[in-house]
Each structure stands twice: as structure tokens, then as C-alpha cells.
Image 1 (cartoon, rainbow, N blue to C red):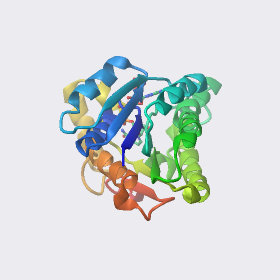
Image 2 (image 1 turned 60 degrees about the vertical axis):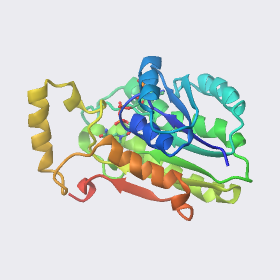
Image 3 (image 1 turned 90 degrees about the vertical axis):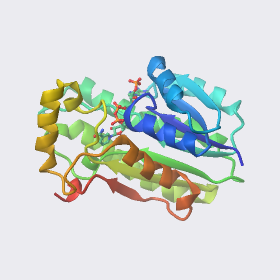
Length: 250
Ligand SMILES: NC(=O)c1ccc[n+]([C@@H]2O[C@H](COP(=O)([O-])OP(=O)(O)OC[C@H]3O[C@@H](n4cnc5c(N)ncnc54)[C@H](OP(=O)(O)O)[C@@H]3O)[C@@H](O)[C@H]2O)c1
């Protein structure tokens, strides 16, 4: 069976680590993001597998770009498909603040981007083969903070949407699950825009919030995404998996 993993936001962080892991397991890849340079770097890092790697720059929040992408995807004649809706943006703001542009941007990428991808890929999912969708939400989608309401609401919507999809798509041989990462060391985190000594201080402060005593790595989230996408979890659908060092309980 030909297996194709379609991974959005694959040019950095969790998406890049996920692409490398699928490739290591000999899946074909379609890696998506806005920046072709970052995607090319991800492709270069996929050295341990034998699958083909297709690179497609695309803004997932732009429905017409996603439609164009889907028409190219159909030419790949995929059998089993894993769609990883990982692309995301984060902007914090004081509660009650954050204008319509901020709210629309957060939802356009974090939720509608995933919806557009699903709508275009669904017709390619042939019922004869098993398929899976993994949505990357956030621990903030389960338990928000005051300063992250737009981002948290977009991720909470993704959690809820995952469950609707799981209910509706099981009969089509499609499983749908969600990973909720905690604080992970990737470019999206503000501490990665600090000079190295300040970043060390920030990480030290964050330690005290973490039951497991440290922030996560992109590879640790990739392992969970891969588990939910692969046949290892063939009887799991509608799961919302926290991979967060326990911070959701703290
Ligand atoms: N790191 C954390 O602590 C954490 C915690 C919880 C949840 N998450 C979630 O994990 C996911 C991955 O984030 P990350 O931590 O790996 O951060 P990241 O390195 O910033 O990755 C986000 C990726 O999304 C891509 N992207 C952003 N807007 C896009 C768009 N409109 N179309 C296509 N691609 C787009 C970015 O690439 P381009 O700019 O090139 O498009 C980037 O590669 C996100 O959904 C994030 O919300 C992260």
C-alpha cells in the first residue's frame, strides 16, 4: 500500500520533526508551508527514508491556493493518506483587546486552514484504504489563559471539530485525532526570539510550571502525531491527546 503523509507547517518546528519521522518510516511526503526555503531545508533533513518528497508552498488559510494544491495532489494517486494539520500562528493580547484582524488571522490559519485542507483532501480518500487525520491543537485549547483568548479559542474549536469529524468519517475508513502540545521549543515561542542568555533564563522560569520539569521538544510531539496517524492506533478515533509534560494539570 502506498502511504502519503501530507503535513502542513512542515518548514519548521513540530511539522519539520514530523516530516522527518514519517520519512524515516518510508512514507511518501507532501510538505506544505508558505516559505519555500524552509521547506527545502526540511526536505534536505529527510535522509533516513526511501519515500518520495513533494514540496508545495501554500498558504493554507487561502482557500483558492489549497484548491490548486489539491488538484496537484490528485496526480500523486495516493492510496492511504495521513493528513497532519499542523500549520499554526500564535499572537497573544490582553483580554478584551486584539482587533478583528488579529482574531480573523488566528482563525483563518489555525482553524480554517485545517478545514480547507480537509475539504480538498477528503475526495482523495478512497474507502478501500485506511486514512487518518491528525489535528495539532494546543493545551491552550483545553485550558486557556487570559492573554491568549483568540489563539486558545481557535484551538478549542479545532478540538471540537476533531470530534465531529471522528463521528462522521469513521464509516469512510478515516480516523481523526488531535494532539494538544504543551510548551515546546520551536520558533513559535517568544523565548526563541530572545538572546541565548535570556532564553536560558526564560526556560529556567518555565521549568517550575512543568510537572515533568522541562519544556518539550518537537520530536516528542512528532512521535505522538506519528502514533495517531499510523496503523499502530488503528482502533483510536476522536482522541484528544495531551502531550504537554503535565502542564494541563498544573
Ligand atoms: N511550540 C509550542 O509550544 C506549541 C504549543 C501548542 C501548540 N503548538 C502548535 O503546533 C503547531 C506547529 O507549531 P510549531 O510550534 O512547530 O511552530 P513553528 O515552528 O512556528 O511552526 C508553524 C509552521 O506553520 C507554518 N504556517 C504558518 N502559517 C501558515 C499558513 N498560513 N499556511 C501554511 N503554513 C503556515 C509556518 O511556516 P511558514 O511561515 O513558512 O508558512 C511554520 O512552519 C502550530 O499549530 C502551533 O499552534 C505549538
